[in-house]
Length: 87
Image (cartoon, rainbow, N blue to C red; front, side, top):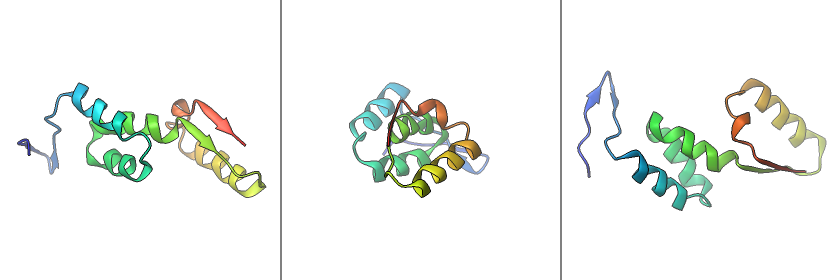
């Protein structure tokens, strides 16, 4: 385990960004692992979101589509990560 430094009650990532990005890329098909990575530290969040929201598949029913639209409206920081939307 690499050493970390306490910083105002949080922990700073000390692994080089290129390494963490590669690790997250390898986990790209494991949504559960990506969700955990996104909570690990702020530095891991953008790359995790990139894979979590890259392709969205919605069921052809009004509720999931409306829920996703509301989610995007309330979480505008996520919409830039969506590259493909299948309905």
